[in-house]
Amino acid sequence: MLMQQAETRALQRNHPLSSQAVQLFCYLLLGIALPTGLWLLGRSELIDEPYVVSTLAIVTCASIAVWYILSRLRQYAKARLLSYVVPVDLLAFAAGAALIGVLRLPYSIGLFGSCLIATTIVSYVLTAITRLGNKSLYIVPGGRVSEMRPRPEHVSVASLDEFENLVDQGGISGSVIGDLHFDHPPEWERLFAKAALRGIPVYHYRQILELETGQVRIDRLSENVLGSLIPNLPYMAAKRAFDIVATLLFGPILLLAMATIAIVIRLDSKGPVLFIQDRMGFRGEVFRMVKFRTMRERTVSESVAALRNDAMTKDDDDRITRVGRFLRKVRLDELPQAWNILRGEMSWIGPRPEAISLSEWYETEIPFYSYRHIVRPGLTGWAQVNQGHVTGVDTATDKLRYDFYYVKNISLWLDVLIALKTLRVVAGGFGAR
Image 1: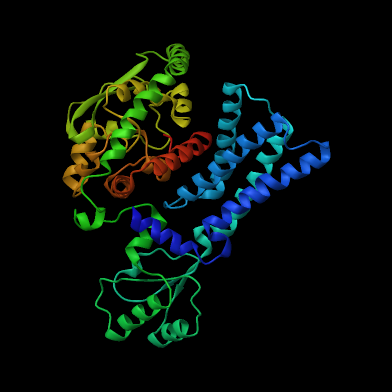
Image 2: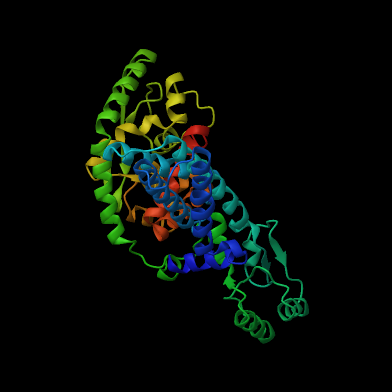
């Protein structure tokens, strides 16, 4: 994780505004001080008024929170930060408004709104200027660099002389990428070292491929690939505590929503309200996952092939009911899994649990498939928000690479990114079948 953070910072550091200290200064100056000064001048108010002081303290904390959250999310692959600027700003300032209400602080809605708008503008501009995709990556030929998908910021280095000229003349404004496990000629090795000594980041292609795709591409199950075969244990313990607290805290709202959905399902089609199925879970243990029924009742043969085919959801699946299609699109069919979360069988965020028939099939076809069970399965996960559902072994392999990325980088901030992506998925219906 520390390696990935260093990579991301190096890839982003070319722009003067990439410095975290500079960005924080911009937030405080342009997001707080400037709108506050204009507001005070327009109203002829004094800054020492109690309601001005309390409002200013809250919006300053909210602005710093926005700066910090966006800087942490930037460390992960597929973090399209422009998509998250508004949600992060609104959540941070909503938390500030809630704190004002709980503490019954005097406040100014005009000052609060002015700082919210200014901070959002600052967030958007800084993110647009410094996001990862703006930096050039110079690709050195040889080995497996061809696995990298061509992108506009990729610059192919055609020859040794071209690379040497770029290094000597300071023509490299981004980072150098190569297959550092490939047996390059000594001249190339010396140039890699020379570039590094001149402050030019030099990375193994797989590190950048992971940042771009959000997948861990593996040839064998190795601690050298995943960092450690045991994920972040302290965070997993804290994550479990959060799952319990969040489920109990939102329990009344969840029960009300589920009661309403249950009535609608009952009126829409015949059959039970809930669908219960054995799934492969944490550490390979089978558990009974519960969700709302979204398909019509049907009889399925007990053969392995029939069970496997029935477990896969297809495009425009005619088994899905009218209400079920909507529930799947907005992910509300998963709400009953709050019960599985309380029981410790699932988490709010993690790799999705597979049906037993599919899990056994994938395990025979994909090496290391069972390693995804090293963390608790989740109601939503990294693969779901980036890929959607799978329909075969080929797409299951891609999904596994997403799952391994999550296991390798599991942290609070990756979970926050997944939560934000899930909100976007719910709004757009991506990946829902």
